[in-house]
Length: 481
Image (tube, helix red, strand yellow):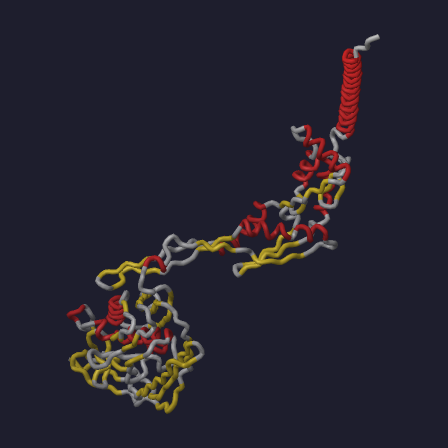
């Protein structure tokens, strides 16, 4: 009998394949059914879970350390509002050089941002993405989801309380001015930074205290400075000039009450003619040279001057008020004084706001006031005359180089009384008319010293001496018939 082995092998192979296909078909449908069943079960469970917490925060959702799982959105907000009410007596003291304000947490509704946090807690697991929602619900249930606390306050109420202080702080920036004509500055103004309350920094600072204030029992009091934001000008002094003139380096002041009109006119004229003068580095400034001719031809009026031991009317009386004031600015700036002369006698004008001896007389061309610019930068001389208050100011601008000035109080010695009053007949005055031309002044020797240091070393030391003669009052007595 002949056996056909290839046919037998083929039949066995086909039968084996049919069994495998059957097994695979059964496994597929079983797996599919199981998966569908699982999806149905999970969907049903998720539906029931969502239904259970339809209007509630899902379990495991925290705000800070507070568990709000199972609470309604309103319950969350009410709970946080209650905690806010516990700190209503807590106070914030806001300090500045312009005033101090104290506000309570209740005044500005300070505390948890209850409405926002309640909404955020409730919305966990309630987005438009099914997978994200499922992931968040599982995460919150198994390990918890912790929301960072959010804090709030009424900014409008706080700003309203701070308004008086804010107005005092508020300052607009000032742009620099620097215009020159024929080597003289015709318009000058230093730039100035402006300032305002930094509301963003104030907000951040205030809210930074929220965790400690909300956790404190009893109510807390917190004090901190009001933050101020600097506003830079559009045009700064450094940008507008290249001469190194960027700051005030010295100032001098004087008063001239009771001056006759001609003297007031001359003080104003001379001060204006010196205003805007530039002194180059290394240059020696001469008052006489800078001012030029002092006479009726150059616009000056007659006022009292000291000449040949007498006080008489002369052109330009009052110019020494200007030289005296500039001398004081030179002293204050710590600049080397090359030439200075004291008056023959004590002049009342120069002691209205100053001790005796801080004066400087000029009489062109022999008596001058000179200083040297040793700062290494240009110096600008600026004058300001207040005709309402009869005051004069000189300001010197340049670049500070670290020098510091110390002056002693003038020492007065050898005081002598004035001579007796002198009456002189004057045929140009009518009978009965008496006119005073000189005023009594005590004689005295006065001195003061000035020390200028830089980097701890003395770079200038001056002793200024004034020998004032006693001066008698002189009256002219009219004899004209």
